[in-house]
Each structure stands twice: as structure tokens, then as C-alpha cells.
Amino acid sequence: MARYDVPDEAWALISTLLPPERNRVGGGRPYLEHRPVMNGIFWVLCSGAPWRDLPERYGNWKTIYNRFNRWSKSGVINSIFNKLLQILDENELIDWDAIALDGSNIRALKAAAGAKKNTLMNSRIMGLVALEVVLAPKSIWRQTARGCR
Image 1: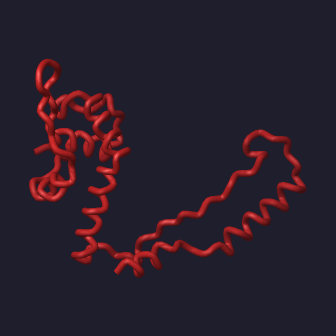
Image 2 (image 1 turned 45 degrees about the horizontal axis):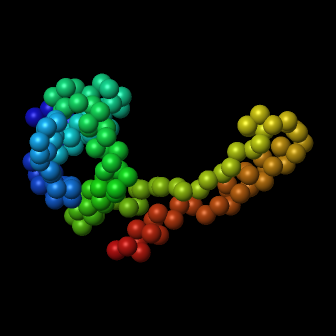
Image 3 (image 1 turned 90 degrees about the vertical axis):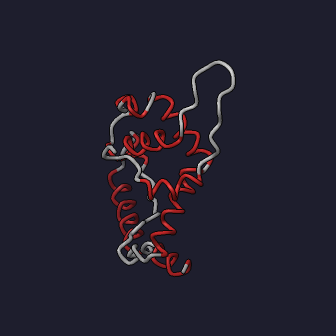
């Protein structure tokens, strides 16, 4: 088993969440099984390498990328993530107090995009932005986690 390959115990958990494998009838390339595809996806995501650098033992990089893209758009990857997160939470392996996700968003100034700069106006706006950041409510993730339990 290679470094980023999915262990048998983890495969048993996520294999049921994947779409059914299909057999190609007639000509064309044979259908690549889901397990080497998932191993290839994890290799790219964990290593940070480009898709084209995927080792050949996982199959054609384009096949792995296309399946990852299709599964991401259809919600398969999200359901796998949520299932694994649920299992970790049920076994109390997640410290929700240490999680800090922040969904706040601050729009950049027009000057950041190359607009004419008005230093007096920009300093006022920056002061207001700084005030908003300081007064903004902190992450609601902790409150959401408590509500889910």
C-alpha cells in the first residue's frame, strides 16, 4: 500500500457512498474501478502536486481528474466528507472548541483594483473597515456545533 492509499477500514466506510460502478459494454476503454480513482484523488490532494504529475499506478490523470470533478459537482465528495466528519464527531474525536472557521467577508476598496486614489477618503474608509472588523461577531461555528448536538 502506497503512502496516500485508502486503508481497507476507511474504504469500507466510503465505498457505499460512491455511485455504482459500471461495466463498459462494447468497445472503448475499460472502466477504472473506484478504489484506484480515490487513491489517486487523495494522492493529488495530499501531495499538492498538479494532476498531470499523478503516478501511473493510479491510472490516467485525466480520468482521475474527470471523475473527481464529476463527483465534486454531484455532491459525492461532500457526502463522503460529511460521513467521515459524523463518525469522528460520534466518537468524540473532534474538539469543537478548537475549530475556528470564519465566514466573514470584507470587500476590497476600489483603489485596490486600480481606481484613482483619494487618500483622505481611503483613510476614512479604512478606519470604518477596521471598526467593522473589530466589532464583527466572531465565528458562529462554535454556536452551530452546539446546536447540532
